[in-house]
Amino acid sequence: MELVYPERLRPGDLIAVVSPASPPYGAKREGYRRGIQYLRDLGYRVIEGEHVSSENGYLAGTDEQRLADLNAMLQNPQVRAILCTRGGYGSIRILDKVDFEAAKNSPKILVGYSDITALQLALLSQSGLVTLSGPMVAVELGAIDPVTEKYFWPLLTGTRSLALDGKSGGARLRLYRGGLAEGPLIPGCLSVISALVGTPYLPDMNGAILVLEDVGEPVYRIDRNLNHLRHAGILSGLNGLIFGQFLDPQPGVDAGIDPDRALDELFQQVADRLDCPVLGRFPYGHGPKKYSLPVGPRARLDAGRGLLHLLTSGVSHAQET
Image 1 (cartoon, rainbow, N blue to C red):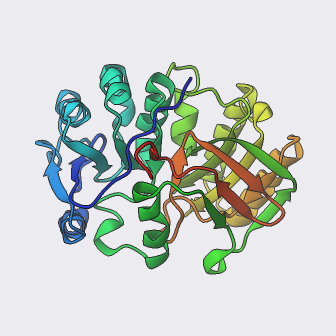
Image 2 (cartoon, helix red, strand yellow):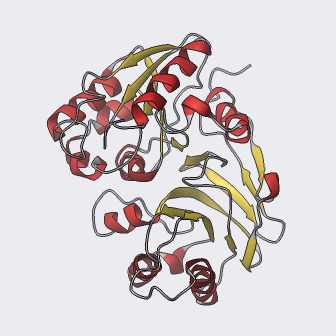
């Protein structure tokens, strides 16, 4: 599918904020308030979805309400970017009713990660829309880490390629299999990607560089999800594989294991089955200090050097001079 790039963000543009999954409740209410103010202090205009803070159990309102907010922003010609409040759960419930035609015909920047992975991959597979796996309003933007901030805004406002050094900030990379690779970059949450297998919302992974992360998952479930991707033929078709942040892994069925060591062994086992470069502990995921990554454009991986080259920022350069 031909990729569709949104225009880059400019000073004074209108940013929409929606909650396709869970609402910013509890401690995230204050983070949401600060995040909105952060955007306004940067000079952007902000419009909030009508149901952005609605609460319906673990969902931000009903499926119909969350969908109405999202589609309204996709259809609004004045909106230049859509930022999600948080992840949680719920994006997968509304995929079959997303206005993919609006996303294709009037492309806008869309930013999120975690559960928002489902929406981003659906937009890529159904509309060709390039989105950004990056900070969310109620989670990071209210008190954004300087490194995260430094590498976030250039992907929204500029069109130049970027080289991301996985060792930046003292990160301890793990090389599971060396080599060079190039292909479409597909970053996202492992458990969400696994849930999309067998649906029309998972884009073609053949030849891709897949970047995986997750949080709070027992090691055995990470194992299960990776083997789900393997048995589905997804891993064998990759040009490159990057394991990002797998935070707070739980012991799961065996409380006596060391989760971090078990994960390291698991990732090495996965790498040993593949013929492509495999890099681990890349600073991408749920942690406060991380890189943002475009979803869909081509990238180049130099696993031995720990470098990921974004060959495009993920926004349109049509109007550049």
